[in-house]
Structure formats: C-alpha cells, structure tokens
Amino acid sequence: MRKVLKKVAICGLALALAAGILPGLSAPAAKASNDVTVASARAGIMVPLNHFFASSMDPEGQIIDFLDGGAVFEEPAEPESTEPESETETEPETTEPETTAARRKTAYDNIAISRVENRVNIRKAPNTKAEIVGHIGNDAAAEILDTVDGEGGEWYRIRSGSVEGYMKASYFVTGEEAEKIAKRVGTMIGRTTASALRMREKPSTDSRTMTVLGRGQEYVVLEENIKGTDGNLFVKIGLDEVEDGEFSMVGYVAAKYVNVRVEFNEAISLEEERAEAARQAQLAREAEEAEARLREAMEAAQREAEAKKKAEESKKAAEESRKAAESKKAAEESRKAAESKKAAEESRKAEESRKAEESRKAEESRQAEQSSQAAEQPPQSTQPAEPVTTTAPAEAPASTEEETTKAPETTKAPETPSEPEDKTLLREAIVAYAKQFLGNRYVFGGNSLTDGIDCSGFVQQVYAHFGIKLPRVSRDQAVSSKGTPVTRAQLLPGDLIFFAGDNGIVSHVGMYIGNNEMIHAANSRQGIIISSLEYRSPCKYMCFIK
Image (cartoon, rainbow, N blue to C red; front, side, top):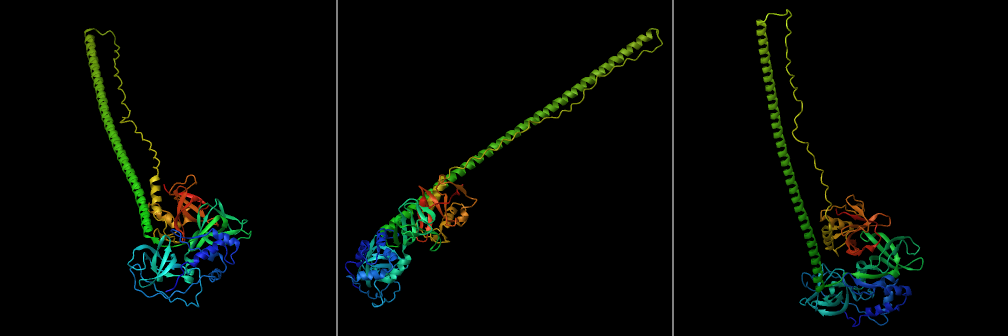
C-alpha cells in the first residue's frame, strides 16, 4: 500500500499555474490558462493540469522540477488480487506496475481514470456491504483524495463530479497511463463570448472569413494558444464532423473570445441518476402526449372527412333521386301530351271525314232534286249544264315537331378543396419526439437514435417516425423536391436548417425546435445537443411538413 500526502501536491501545482510562477511558462500562456477550466460532461470535475499539458512544451519536466522542490511522491504497491464484489464490480485484469526507477512522476499521480466494463459502484465505505452512493463508467476521471485499506485490499477515496466515495484502486489507472488515456478521452470544448465571431481560414486577422459564429455557442477545440502571424493568439476549432475525428470545416478564432474547458466522463450519483431518469421519463411523456394529441386531431379530422364524405354521398344520392323523379315526371307528361295530341288529331280527322260525308250527301241530294226538276220541265237548251264540283278542304299536314322530355341537365362546378389544417400539432409531436434523444451518441454513418447516429440520419429517423421520407445524406436533403425552401422569418418548429462546408457543399443539418434553437447530432464528442441558431451561418432552410 502506498503512502499519500495529507495535502495533495496537485493543489499547490494548480495554484502555481494560476499565479504563473512555474518556470518556463510565458506570460501570454499564463494569461490564457486563467480562462480555462477543466470540466466533466455532467457536472465539471476539476482536473487543473490538462490545460498546462496542452500548452507547455515540456510539461512533465516542469512538473517534476516543481514537485522536487518540496513534495514527495511514493510508489504504489502492486494491487492485491481479490474476488469479484458483485455483478457490477467484476475486477479488471491488472498488470504489474513499473518499478520506481523506470517510472517518472506525472501530474496524473492524483488523477485517476477508470478502466471498467459497463459501470461500477461507488460506496460510502471501503467494503462491498457499504451503501452505494453512485456509479462510474469506463474512461471517467476522478480525483484521488486518499488511499485506504479496505475489503480485499487497497481502495481509493475519490471525488468525481458530485460524487464522493470509495472504490477499489484496481479499477483505476494513474500516472503516465492515466495521462495517455486522458489525452484520448478528454474533450476540449470552446464557448464563444462574442457575437458574430469570425472563423478564419488561417491564424491571422488578415485571413479569409470562413463563417461567423454566435455568442454562447460551444465547439470542439482541436488546438489552443496558437500564435498567429500577426502576434495574436488563436484557437483551432472543427465544425461538421464527417468521419470520426475529421471535420468538414476547420478554422481559427481569436482566443480572447473563447473560453476553453476540458470535459471528461465522470461518476453520477444516485440522485443524479434518478433526476436523469425523471428527465428522460418527462421527455418520453411529453413525446407521447404530443403524439396522442396529434392522433386525436388526425382521428377527428378523419371522422370529419368521413362525415363530410357521407354527407356528400347522401346529397349526391338525393340529387340523383330528385333528377330521376323529375325525369320520370317529364316522361309521363310527355307521354300524356303525345296521347292527347294523338286523340286531338284523330278527333280532327273524324270531324273532317264527317263534314265531307255530309257535304257529299248534300250534293247528291241537290243533284237528285235538280234531276227531278229537269224531268218535269221541258229542256230549254241543248247545252249540257256544267257539272258542279266541290273541293274537299285540304288536310292539315302532320306535325314534324319532336317531343321534349326534359330540360338539359347542368353540372355543378367542383368545389375548391379547402387549405390543409394547421400543422402545429404535428410539428409539436416531431420536436417532442426528437428531444427524447438528447445526449445520445453521435456515430458517423449511424442510423440508431439510441445507439449512435449522425446529423442527417437523426433528422431522417425522426421524420420517418411520422411517415415523412427524407434522403439519407444532408446535401441530398437540402435539394430534395419533397421539401420547400423557406426564409428565416418563415421558419417553424420541425423545419430543417442546413450548413455548408468551406467548399460550399452542404455538410450539416439540424432541426428547428422554436425559441431560436435547433437540435442536432453535433459530433462524436458532444453527441445530440441543442444549440442556438447562431451556431454558425446557415445556408438554407427547408420545410418538409405538408
């Protein structure tokens, strides 16, 4: 078991760094370090040496010189082999520590990095029967407060985030090994402090402006304290991750307008776990409620559409019935008119025939009377009398007029379809569903909202949940005929915001959620986050919600 100083030497070193008294640290670098804090992804574990390692040319040598002035580090003993504590506390394999002669002192002797599978319990006392106060996952940072004898061997009393408790020392690495891991798993994040901050192509105020960043936005820092050709200090940042660790746009911003911190994974307390579970449950409830409201609205709209359809069908049937009745009535009236006309014609013909017969008989009677008179009187002339002829009245020509059954039908002009109802409920449901996945992993090319996804996959999968189909890649989404370009003023929750790389090609996409904010899968170091629309200069806005 190793001996540990009651007063941790690292605190003195941090104070020395803040005061700028460590040999070899230039004044500009010391000033820059005052703006830097080291934080975890959840609550901000303090590891004040990370910035020094990033900015010093010989950090190990300077630290050793400082520590040799009064602080003494003693070597840890080899961890004892113990039985597993529980299903969540299986011992990792350990290797024999280096000898004292081979091992150098490092700033990470009192900073530990966890090496576990899944997560391990942090307890209130150094034994497996003690109360659990929190959990820690792999590659998480912790400050070693003390080393004690506990159940099965050496335990550390640690502080990680808001959690303070005990864990077996064998779950951690320190010193040089911890330093190597920290440089790999730690993430430098820069937060801008100025509005309309120019991101330049090179570390110089004379260099071309690539894009403009907003105040209070956070970006992945690739390198800091870069001295520009004009003598100013710059921070190198990356935008729009296209592959693991590779960015479509890399540029430089003035260091005086960026606060840099280093984030590590850290332990989480039981209270924080419960709070996180409650937050996730609340987001899930909000998403379910939003979808329930959407379903109710859609069902109501469906019922209204069906009722309207039935009313239209009933109206159509009634109209057809009315037309059929009118047609039948007209046909009956036409038939009666035809019969009446025929009867009138027959009556006329009969009357004419009767009159002709009477005229004939009258003529015959007259001729008979004349013959009788002629026989009684002697003939007065040898010239025969001219015969009297009668002309029968001409028969009226038959009517050639066609029958009319009914007036020509008129067709009703089609009704203009009403505009679609407000899509507010759909937009609310889309945004609520997307928010459920805040904090989840970014994986380039990934398609899982829970296990890892990239920016274009994120909006595609969220939209797919509501039956809206999008292309897979952001540059194809930005030109899809399924979307309608809109302006910034027309932007509504659920619409998409596109960003172009330095080559002008779309390389990133986010979803507007209202209040001048968007949700997006940012990169592998930040995951799915919410940012302001001032994140950087957009190139296009699109609406896919019809």
